[in-house]
Length: 454
Image 1 (tube, rainbow, N blue to C red):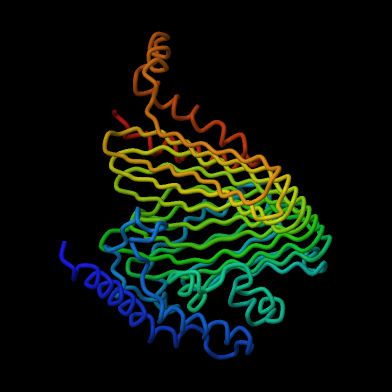
Image 2 (image 1 turned 60 degrees about the vertical axis):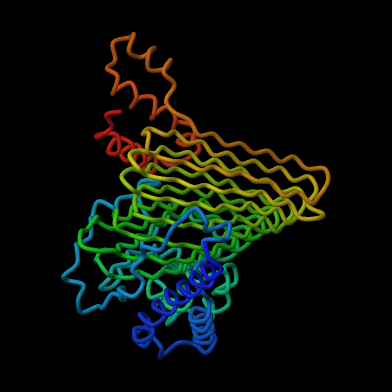
């Protein structure tokens, strides 16, 4: 390696960053620059300046060194245009069925050519806001402006700044103090189209003593002929004594490059039950952070993933205990087929003074093919006394004794392995309180295992 190599690499990353900014500079003018409140406009402008100035992620950084994005065709993407959406793959209407409960209290469907929104009238009368991002900017500017960019900051990275500056789709959920929403809310971002960039921003604000269940899904068909890009932000606040059950499903097509920054902040005595499910995409890099900022706050993070082909999934999770008597519990489980790769890197951080913390994290991986690879990297950083924090990680193959046991009872080998995989995922299924979500995951397992011959 020559002395010039690092400089060449830096210049290459700068060129990639410039190409990405140049590709969207003209398109930015088409992302509602008129009619915004001064505060929202200032936020978007500042984020754009950051987006232009920040470099692409450095593969030398710990967070990015296991995910190669050099194949991203940054200069080719364009934002969806309303007059061209009829040429895109139609929405799979089956995705609109309730996954939690028997009916939706409200639904937001985000399409390249428009949106569909609905919300129970009684909830509207109580001050609940559940709508798409563009409508929120127009009709609820004061509420949105006070919360935009308060949980995830644009300066946290190139893609965070990009989403903050260019988000043209997304959801704003606001639940006023003391409002309890019995039936779940649901939203879907449908993102078809090779060469398109879907830039989303979800803002979820649950005030003190309020309660809600919310299911959001990202989805698209698998398409040939190029790449599709999704860049997203998810900002969530759970107030004092509030309760949020938040389910995120990712079922992108296998040509989609997906980059998201997500953070949930939980106040005193608040609680969040956060469920992730990743079944699609070509490359996914997800930053997911849980900030327990109030005394007695609790958070649970449950993750399911199943990769095949050449899929690459990289989850970077953080459990931050920033106040005393806080509790976090993370369990991510996944299986890998073919040449796919999964990276999970987790950290439990306990701040000074955050005594009586109880933190747990575990990641379990089942590698089903010789060429598949899983990297599991748990971590602890404890700066307080009188705490209990534990972590664990495993990467393994199917136990031959389990196969022998099932085959001895007349079950064919392939079917035995499928049963073992389903059993492996059972602990994560038990943490999901929604039959519809469990059924979706079980369907994904069956679909991925159809071609499993190992």
